[in-house]
Length: 75
Image (cartoon, rainbow, N blue to C red; front, top):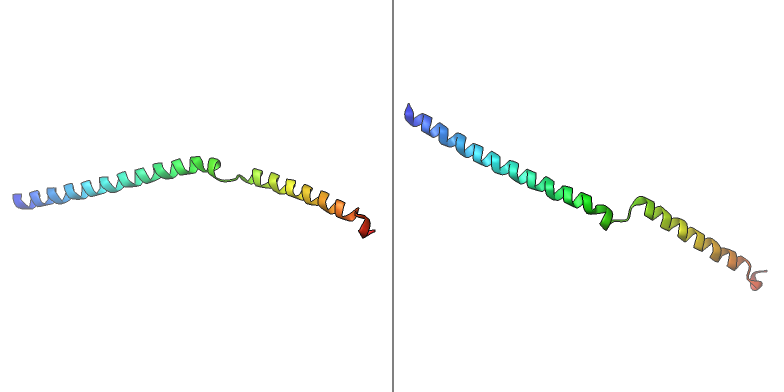
């Protein structure tokens, strides 16, 4: 009877150790993802910046188009 209890304690201990190791790995992965997500605004262009750049390009293209329309050889 006592041998079964020792075997059970060893199995439960190994399972607890394995479960703790898995939880630790998950916790570390979440920390790394959190760090990556927090640094995203520094790495990637935000939607507002993208739209501002597109508006600037449209303005420049509009001025170019106006200059092309005003050329003497087009009249």
